[in-house]
Image: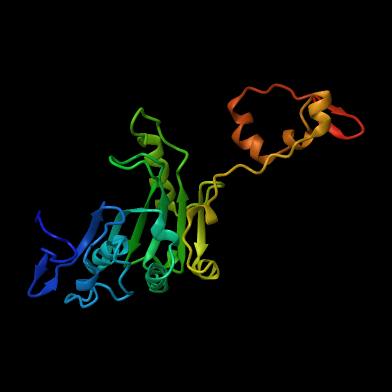
Length: 253
């Protein structure tokens, strides 16, 4: 463990070059201002092949430092604010470079208020310099923003929440309204935007108001047969029977 300025004066060096590691894990400061863009523009270690981020948001400078600190088989996980997923200009160019080199393995959305000092939701970027052949040309998006234990001042992930994230990542699994495997070509079509909800949206479908049901009572058949309601709501109840009334317009009561 060495204390220092990671971006201006990296401490883990050897013979004038960065040391490299099998695993790199970090939670750098979010959107650090005055992080050292001037020095980074002429970096002696060649850590910024995709360009340098804005001077008032050093997030992707830390990401590139970590990538440069990985060996050829290395893998990293870093906590980032969601802004790095969709902000434009130089940050878009950096995302594009990382994606074109097929380094990004997963983007994991986390619930809000998990970390001290900020209530904003964060995400995990998983970078792998040796992606398995079956995962090349793809990125796994996991949206776990709704799965947590609420606390008075700070939320936390329960063991089952962590286990679900890990299982989904390890199996590179698609789960409806939770995770999605997206080919790089689709991300390129979306202008290299990595906004998690664009690919793994947890939002329920828009509510359709049934005037007849509102006036006369009953549940519209459309809602009874809704895949979303069946999966997300009815499974929480012991429903022994549903009585369907067929009138001029289908509804259920």
